[in-house]
Length: 252
Ligand code: NAD
Image (cartoon, rainbow, N blue to C red):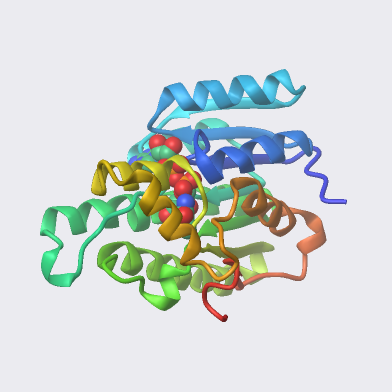
């Protein structure tokens, strides 16, 4: 079940958190994993861990917000069966407290970065007769998290881009889905708490954990398991869907 043998998977932001868990699991399941990262140290470390486990992995320094870097990197990889558009950054602020520079920064990475990867990968997938794309959205896409105006807007764009791509390339044998986690305990969350609530780290961590109906944050491995299913041939009937994985956050 859920073998990725003979598949080449590209994972953006694969050096840390959710992307790292996906890279590790995809490598374990037989995929040749290419990590696209700004942080070359974490990318190199993750590649090393995958190789130590007997898997095949490569790292590429690339800023997803720069189209020429993404196109060159993807063309260099050549055959790509699976793309996970996962790189993303967070931001705190409401519409009137988000600067233009911060809005542009979030959109450049979270939205333009995903678009750049789609722009680069779709011709490659069409040329080889198909592929699978998974976009990391967030529950922010549909609920609009308090004080996360730019971030929520960026994830709303990811949610809708998923539908457009699924529709436009249905007959090119390209499936496209998204996942929408609630809070997952990753360096993204730790960094966010440290930056915005210095000295209150444990208190805020506990508060955020308890704010989820299930009483804790998700783990990167739990998200990676869902991603594995969606990127595997077992999910051949699944396209144009957003999979919420949120410990009950949106419904309970
Ligand atoms: P993380 O910060 O641990 O990892 C993100 C990785 O993306 C980092 O390694 C970073 O170097 C890389 N990255 C950032 N900008 C980049 C760029 N321009 N080009 C290439 N790489 C870049 O974050 P995470 O928590 O694992 O989050 C991964 C994804 O999941 C993000 O899209 C995030 O919005 C989404 N998400 C996270 C949570 C959560 O609670 N952690 C919840 C919902 C959705």
